[in-house]
Amino acid sequence: MSGQTVANSVGGDYELLKKYKMRTLIFYGTKVWEPAWGSDFWDAILSASSYERQTNKLFIYFNNDMEKMEFENQ
Image (cartoon, rainbow, N blue to C red; front, side):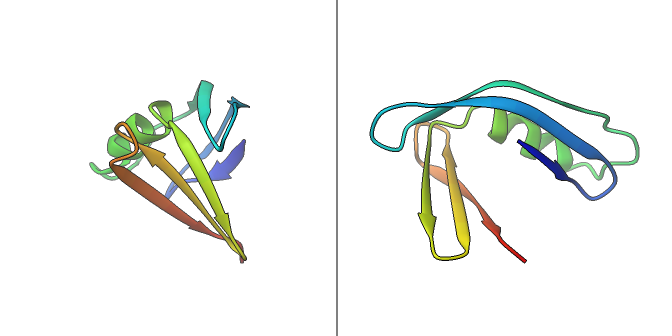
């Protein structure tokens, strides 16, 4: 995976498992000038447990599938 946070480039590796399950193997990047909530994103992506795709959106679930992040293709 690769992307951009508010202030930095990030990347990592993940593994897709059965039935839309996943796990993050490694996640890296710098945290220079990130806002305070930026560490929440790092924690969430490191604890990713499953995913769902809908048209141009990707949902990544974390915290035992109780919470999710939403990404939109632009």
